[in-house]
Image 1 (cartoon, rainbow, N blue to C red):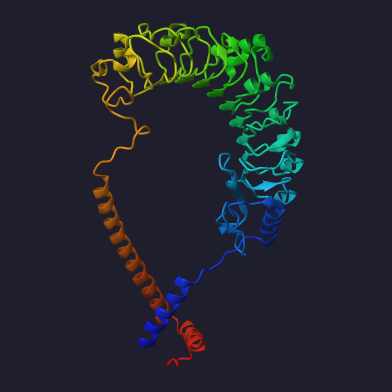
Image 2 (image 1 turned 120 degrees about the horizontal axis):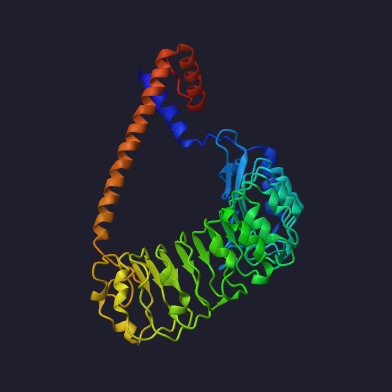
Length: 451
C-alpha cells in the first residue's frame, strides 16, 4: 500500500507540472509564421508569443477545442497608439491556408496603402471580417461577395478605399453589420437600392464621412420601398446633407438609432415613432425649437451638442409623457432660463452639459425632484464618467479577496485529494498497470519498487 501512495503522489506531481500539448496542425502553424515574417514592424512585440508547436496558445489565435483547427485570428491594433500597430507592405497570402478561419480582425494596423488582396474572397468560412482603419487603398475586390457566410464586414475609416460597384455586396445575404465609413462609394450606381433593399439580414449600416448628399439617393424609389428595410442602426454623420433630412428616412419603420451629426441640417426633424436614439450634434439649427425634437415622445437618448443655437431652451409640451433618459447639450450655445416644463422628463437620468456662466447653470435643482438617478452639472450629483466617487469599497474589496483566497485553498485541496484517490483506485484495481507504473518510477527515480 505504501508503494501505491508513493506512485500516486509521483504521477499526480508529473500530471500537475507537465503541459500536455494538443498542438495545432503543422501547415496552419507554418501559415501563421509566414504571416508574421511578412510584417516589417511589430514595435510592441505583440506577436512575441508566436513560437513553439502549439499555435492555439499564441496571442490572438483561437482554435476549435475538438478539431484543433485555427478558427480565429484576432489581432487588432490601436489607431491612437502607433506602437501597438503591426505594419506590413501587404497582407500575406499565407492566411488563405487557414481554411477553417471564421473570424479575422486586422483592424487598426498599417498595411501601407496596399490593396485588399483578392484571396480574401476564398476564405468562405469567414463570418466576421474587420479591416477597418488598416490603411488599405484602391478598389474593394468584388471577390468578397463570395463570403456568403459573412455576418459582419468592417471596411470603415479607410479614405483611400473605393467601392465602384455594389453588385457583389448584394450577394452577402447573411450580412448583419456593414461599416463603410469614410469609403468612397459615390461612384457606385444604385448603392442605395442594394443597401436599403437587397440585404434581408442587415440591421446596422455605417456610412459616416462618405461625402453623401441627398442627390446620391433615389428618393422616389426609396420613398416607395423603404418600409421593407430591416436596418435598425443607421450612421450618416459627417456627410453633406443640408436643410432637411432625406425624406425616405421617416418611412424606415425598423429604425431605432439614427446619427445625423455634423451635417448642415436646419429644418425640423420629422417624427419617427420607433426611434430611441437620435444624434444631431454639430448641425445648423437656428434654435432649439427648430429641431422639433420634443415631438419624439418615445426617444431615450438625444444629442444636440455643438449646435451653436443662439436661442433659449424650449421645454417639452407636445407629449403627455416622455421616455428621454439622456440629453446632451454640450457647447450648444443655449442661453436663458430653464423652462419649468422640463419636469415632464420624469425618466431623465443624465443631463450633459449645461453651459457654465449662464442662468442655465444656476437653475434650482428642485426642478428635477423625483429624478433620483439624474446626474451631471449643474446638479450636485456627479456622473460616473465625470468624477470617480470613493466609498467604502476598499473594505468590501478586502472581504472579497479573503473569500477568494479561501475558495482557492479549498478548491486546490479538494482537487489534489480527488486526483490522488482516482490514481490510487486505478492502481489498486489493475495489477498490469501497477507493474508498468512501478517500472516507470524505477526508471525515472532509481528507487527499487517491491511488487
